[in-house]
Every structure is written in structure tokens, then in C-alpha cells.
Length: 214
Image (tube, rainbow, N blue to C red):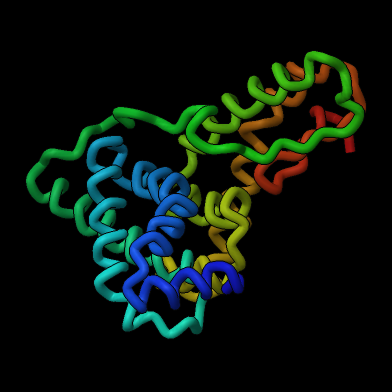
């Protein structure tokens, strides 16, 4: 855990609400995206994240610092989101489609390209980001959540395993198949955008080359 997070946690444990507010501001957006991806509802996700922060605050005395604060907190968010999702499914109230799907503004998809330095680069990046969101939605829940945590949140395999409550090997397997699927889905995007360019497009840990190129 970063020294900054640790210091804030210790202050929060001592009753410093301003310190805990800093942790909320630091991880609220990322937690909201995770919850929204699971629940497919902006309103439900906001409720879960708010309740998760309250639960985490009341449970700070149980946090021993053996993992990063955000890993511990994400585990709380994930469990609460899954619990709400299961309750909705039992009531038959889960919506079939994403009511407020991930957009280019909700998270920053890492897009790395070679030799794209013209004034149109930002427009290009946004177009690619939009296409990636569409491709991510075609992954299974398990694969999407795993690669999201790895490539967008930058979590280690061990941290993801802790959040999801699965083994490191299972995490690695899910990410492998998620990358493979994304590579297939993004081939058309790479070909359409680059045309005859030889550049390689790298997104969410996936290198995409035009069909027929190595």
C-alpha cells in the first residue's frame, strides 16, 4: 500500500474525517465504474459505492494493511454489487441491457500507438476508445471484470484474485482469454483506422495488427 494511503487510513482510524474524504475522492470514480459494470445501472452503482464507503469506514479497525487499501475497498464494492445483482435477479428486476453503459468519458482507456503525432491524434484516441468500450461489452462478465482490473486499474494478478475471491491461476486464465477475444474483435478497427499503415495499435494490453501483418 502506498505510504500516502497508509497515512490517510491511520488518520481516518483516529477519527480524521477529512483524511477519509481524501480516500473517497481518490477511489470513488474507479469504484463507481466497477459497480456500474456489474449492476448495469448508474443509480444502483452510486448507491452501492456510497454504502461501500460507509461500510469501509465503519470497518477500518479491521483493516490491517496486509493489502493495499483500494484492494480491500474494491473487495467490499465487488461483494456488495454482486449481492445487489443477485437480489435483483431473484426479483426478476435486472434489466437486459446496460442502462448506462461505459462511455469514453467514464474511464480513461489506455491507448498506445506508434507514430501517431498529428493534430488529429486526440480525435483518433477517442474513436479508438469508443470502439474498445463496444468490444469490452462483448466479453463475458468474468472476463471483462478481470481485464478491466488488470489493464485499466493496473492491479496485479494477486490483487485481482483477492478482490474476486478466486485463485491467481484463474485470474490469469480469464485475462488470457479476454485478450484473445479482444484481439479478434479489434482487428477490424485496426484495419479500418490505419489503412496501409504499419503501426501497431496497443489497447488494454492487446497488440492489434492489420490482417495479414505480423
